[in-house]
Image (cartoon, rainbow over all chains, first blue to last red; front, side, top):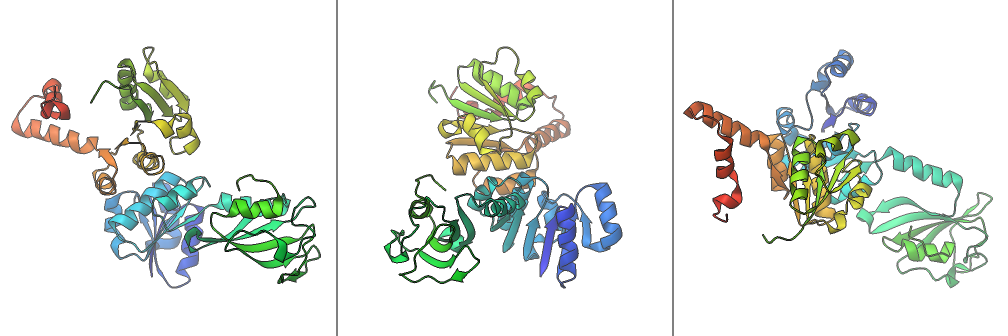
Length: 224
Length: 159
């Protein structure tokens, strides 16, 4: 595969080194003179000096034959423009953008960027799991948002405590996949399985049903 | 165009943004200026009667503070092409602002975003063509004449 990485900071640098070892054709683009000099000392012709936001630079480096463009500069707006140029002007099949502000992730998806990665979001999700506050934590988004796998821990005030799974008023098209009991015991629930305070429920729900799902297990009507 | 008072958001209080903001505010429109550097608001001058919001236009909360949900016009006039492109698209695609114009310096980038549906103005192209024409064909630069020739409503015979 021909992969273009734009942004020679730490993320771009380690990404490049990692991918070279996996036998792909890689080109790292960096516009700063000094940074480029340091990078090219080690990486030689794998680095190219230029501004990845300029269509002419992307043209010169053969962006139209790239399989993937990965934008990992420090600025969200630059990463957005790079990926949009790559996708809409150069027809690159796959674009990945680093997003610093988690709020921009939805915006990027709306503007046609296939994949976004926000370190902040990932860390926030980990923190939420660590803090075990009563929230519905999204673990995985499937089918571009049509379905989600979520994790919710039952507090003692949860309306689902001491209820059998079959008696829960679950939203349509949702299913409990796994119940993690407090003692690290993991079970696949049946209709008769009774839930207890401290249980972690991992469920598959339809995108958009987060509020209804939340009501069943956490009791209030706040939007997720 | 009737004499309706428009809710106009200008992102970027540089020379262009500040000049437009002051002029539009003087004509009675409701102008909201966004800039991430509060010093830039000094360019607005004492006659400016609109609102100023310190922050970046790519942040939806800032745009909401500027009333993007009810704005008639949003002008993205920062000196960063990418910021203007991003702000312009957020305003038009997410908040459905009826009229969005983004200033873009790089002609090639401008081409792509115009194709993607953004209304853009590339001062680089305009200026280079005007100057080239003046020097090659031996005309003195006469800004009044150029304005008369460029103003779209004048060209359409509306004024």
